[in-house]
Picture 1 (cartoon, rainbow, N blue to C red):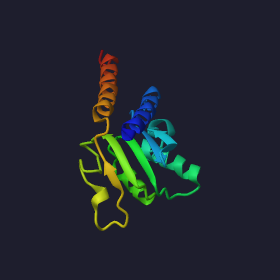
Picture 2: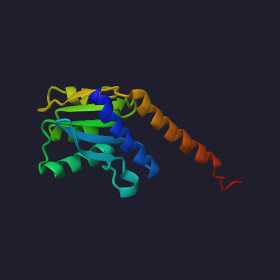
Picture 3: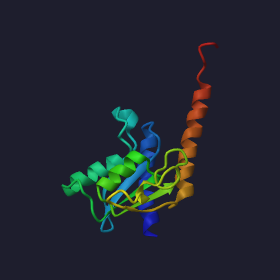
Length: 159
């Protein structure tokens, strides 16, 4: 129940990304049942390949807590994290990561690789996938369908 509530807030962040022309992925960081930071995808607008929703939320949480370590915090994100974001989450010492839609192309929580279950690494963040998966997935599908439709309506130079 609480996971769904926080995932709804991550979905709000994802919708904000969409309004800015970014891939709609949103994230929130929660500590002791309170949202302490939010983030949404911004790599296009910021010209920054690291400006994923998770990274933006982690940066804001670290600033809010005055510490680069985020023990006891949970991160909710609408799309399964990639390797970069999963690595940052482990370095932050998050207690738990909760994601919505799986990412069969770059997911690092089991879809492509499972970074969190590598025994060689010194920190093992817990994760839960599939929270509001259909809603998270639908948002992404609608976004990309809209982009494909817009791309088809642009006349080519040959016309």
